Amino acid sequence: MIPISRRKLITGGLVATAGIAGVAAAGPLVRRYGLIPPDCRGAYGAGETLTYGAQRLLTTNATAREFPRSMISKVPFANEIAPPSEGFKKLAAGGFADWKLQVDGMVARPTTFSVSDLKRMPMGSHITEVSCEEGWSYIAEWIGTPLHEVLHEVGVLPQARYIVYRSIEKDWWESVDMADAMHAQTLLTYAMNDGDLPVKFGGPLRLRVPRQLGYKSVKFVVSLTATDSMKGFGKGLGSASPEAGYAWYAGI
Ligand SMILES: Nc1nc2c(c(=O)[nH]1)N[C@H]1C(S)=C(S)[C@@H](COP(=O)(O)O)O[C@H]1N2
Ligand SMILES: [Mo]
Image 1 (cartoon, rainbow, N blue to C red):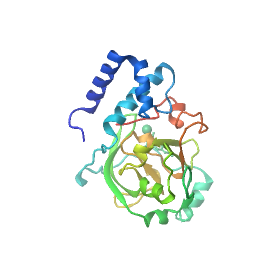
Image 2: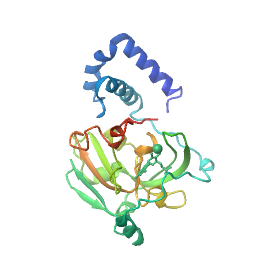
Image 3: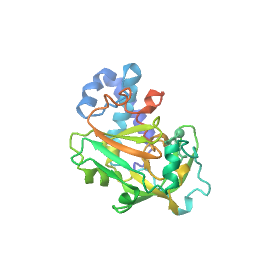
Image 4: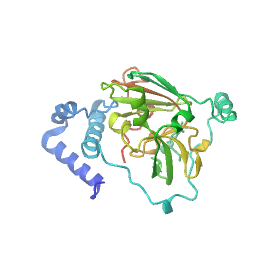
């Protein structure tokens, strides 16, 4: 936790960087430390790079704020009820026993996990907030397998720089860098509050990335791919979000 306003600090840092060195001069530094986000491009890209770079330098090990149990929202707000596809309905009818999470790409042992496989692995949990870029938020307890446990199990290669994750709804896919992928609070979530993760909150499996805005916490996750480059994934900008005008990195 950073006690003073992180935003203030970052804004101050960015102004200083831009003022003293200029955006162009910051380039070699961000390249050297791997601080360039995949959606960096043009004049807008320079701003995204500074935001992401500043956040990464300050927050690689920082944790998302956790709340006491008494602050869990009585009526959590779900933004979506269920994915409409027939395929999903069939899996739901079977209690998601046949739900599969495929893990591939830059890993030593590509593996497919069922939700029960994940439930047998070490468990993580946290009481954190989901905040939508549209302004609403709620607090819930999230329970699941830390993503780093799964990545360790499949032998993620040291060259991997991003983990791409996809929903059964193919319009929804995202990626995170390894700092977020390996972070203890990043969970393949299968339970919420007192029970299995409800479908409207992304059940049976949702990747919760509590250090970023709600849209990075993709529901109904069916696959993960480790990669050293975002080229060849969609338009190469890191996820569906920048293709729709949102930032790839949505740190909070
Ligand atoms: N598959 C899928 N994942 C998704 C979405 C979606 O529509 N489909 N919406 C995203 C957005 S924009 C937000 S803010 C959160 C909303 O989470 P909630 O329904 O738990 O409030 O889920 C994210 N994950
Ligand atoms: Mo959102």
